[in-house]
Image 1: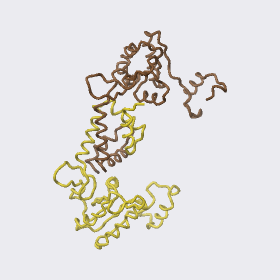
Image 2: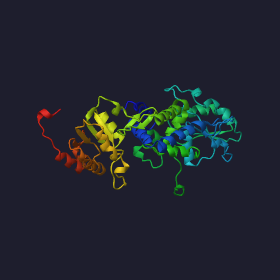
Image 3: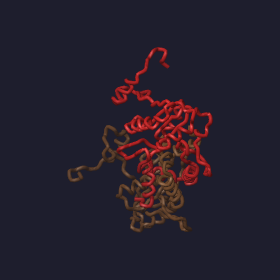
Image 4: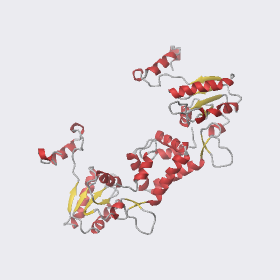
Length: 210
Length: 210
């Protein structure tokens, strides 16, 4: 085999979403035309390396040229955002998913992970410790939405946050709703989801149908 | 949306085997830990950029530090290879697949593509023009195996090669066999494959069963 190229393929194959075959295909694509395929990828990654940072405030990804200032993400820098609302998510992709959904216009706080007894992830392994400081930066906050995932770890984290935020009694706390996903068919759903959707049932009339 | 990161995601999403979602996941994985994930990938790609070349003889990929010498691949450099056999393939991954299969120990010639009237790929867009020169480098050659793919373009290319090699009447020419793939079930096969397998049927006895 091509022992010279195997370490490269093995490296690329370990990246998320790739395997040995797609890694080989990718490597070959990149080397087929170095100036058109490989060089732009190296530049892109180098550019990300130099300019992508964690937002010093909410821990979203921030695109920020290296400077003596602390990097802030486009959301924290945006004075048009609703500073009465804060949404807490586990990971940056969760924040991006919320932004793509387009209905939330408040601020965020990214935990960098959920609490997990199995994986030994405690509050100090996440940004939970700085959450109350973050909240104190926004005196107009009236509601905090906990949008951790609907998993055991996400639920544990939501409860932990609820305890943590007892010191802000003037801020109301909410949790995104569990339920049947749009387009979801009932007979494919687990009973946990179905029971949650049943418990969270809402009044229904002909006028409420959109 | 994260307009700053969108161009990066779009770039990564265009790579073969990746899409918008896996590109976003990959970008996030790389940025989650730059020194452990992003930096090694940049080094790997830079290393490939500097040291991976097309073999000046057979057009396989050669791992070769930049020097004044023409790059030669590990197969062309290997004096243990059987220089009475030459296998012609379309692309480098085809050569790698042959090497992985492990039964062929001769030399190769990579065309860099098959002839295609639809895509306007003529002999001059491939390495077909230098094939006879390559063959003349190996005076001990006794057989040339055409292992272009079993597609219309691959077959056309095989016929073109057969015409081209008329000037070497002392070298026998062969074509890899069409047939039912190992593990293949007949009712899932196209009739072209089935008819080819039928036409290429071989004598069968209890002693030939492996």
